Length: 228
Image 1 (cartoon, rainbow, N blue to C red):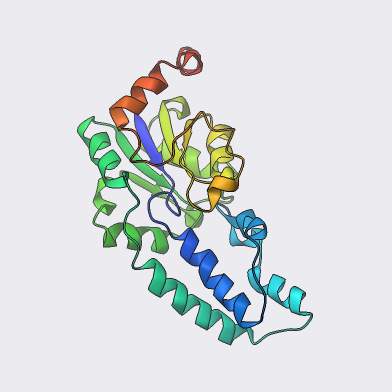
Image 2 (image 1 turned 45 degrees about the vertical axis):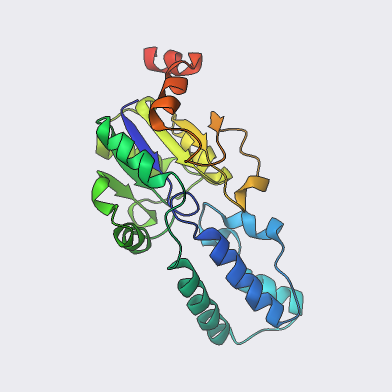
């Protein structure tokens, strides 16, 4: 392996629970709840996959004051997410990758401003050789375009890239790109089917990068890919 590519939302920083819970607070104001099974449809992909505001109006059977609702939800979400630390193991795996001379990338379906502002806030932006977001591609996950764009920028073939992902859409995108994918589910995505991943770990703190790469390199499938 020559490069490590990280997803961002829900993998490096828990932005997904605050997003979901802030929408649930909105729904509760109307005496409703937002089912997790509906919400996970949009995790790891474009927000077009599920419109929580349209769904709220559908359940109510009437329109709501959209601007007011969105402003309230957005402020609650931002207050919440800006208090979130890096998830366990993120900083350590980045440091190990750097020490091992591996290239580092980020592939996210979110906007560049969103991703880079959070990476800068946690003082890790400078570690990454390449960042690709929805602003850089025609199609986000589960399309492989984000991952392939990172690999091209890093000058590393897809088979030489190790991907960390937390969502089903992200795992599918990584596998479509021909990369080795490690699923790291979070509080929300652990209910999803992540079986397409080559390996699943409960947290990035659960295994060191040298240990992980030793397991990856001993995988017969990886050897076949490299030989091919």
